[in-house]
Length: 281
Image 1 (spheres, one colour):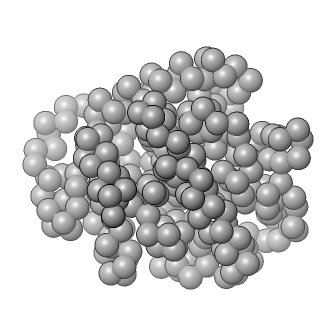
Image 2 (tube, one colour):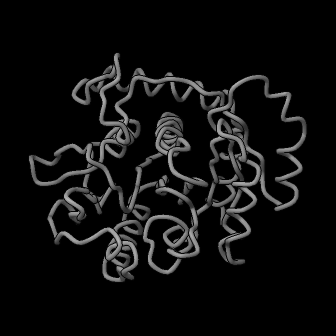
């Protein structure tokens, strides 16, 4: 069973939401693992006795699942530097190329490799929660990306879209993302979440429900903005009260707080029903 968390753009809170859902379903008794086919980050951690590297977001998600981190959870790690990107696959460098060359190459071999890893994870676990990168769909990258809708479509994953409502335009982000999809992609979208909300949620009136009805999907909630002390892979500066990656006990305590906040403001029962329905197929 697959659940895919895709954003309408970068920095909408996909990693945090994925971490919370990993923790929630693990504590419900499911055998859960995280997955992000490809992650570009200068903040990574060495795992498996120095034999591999994964981004810190997938390391934290592993802890949320009460699993030892594996390279399979983040098989492709992209390390930017000096105008080029070093590509690591399963912990091994396979070369350094320009970002444009990597972005627009079809990457068929890598795509097939990561899909095979994803399928194996699903065969061995109850639930794989897939995190996307950047925007769920970009027309100029549709045939070459290997981390968002192309991955979700390849395994028939249930897709939840996430938009950052703090910057405005979140309704258009959801609508625009869906409009750019083909029919098979649209059929995978189960619902959407607004994240990083400031203020009184009643100001939204029934507009989220109307948007959901327009596309025959579910409005799954609006999450108020909140701070957390987990390391942030997109920010090089260390937070004032940032928890060390080595302190698993404190990481789990913080993950539990995040999960409580997230599940308080989303309709987690609808997500459960979506997945249970999938399990009965």
